[in-house]
Length: 64
Image 1 (tube, rainbow, N blue to C red):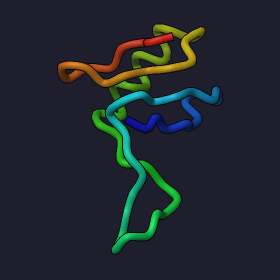
Image 2: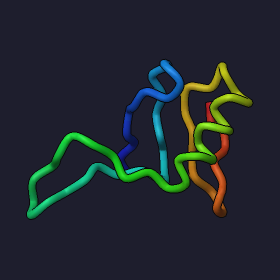
Image 3: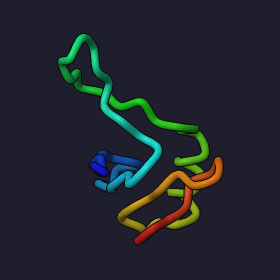
């Protein structure tokens, strides 16, 4: 499993699950496909010290 590093609310975080890079015909593009991005932002606001998030059972959770 590969985690993705991105910026959420101005802070660099790891997305352990629930996100993957866009791919087009075998080439990676700059961008991410994120499950429920609005829920990710809400979880990041509730957990401002978290540095990693995971998408579990339809919602985002702070992992570290």
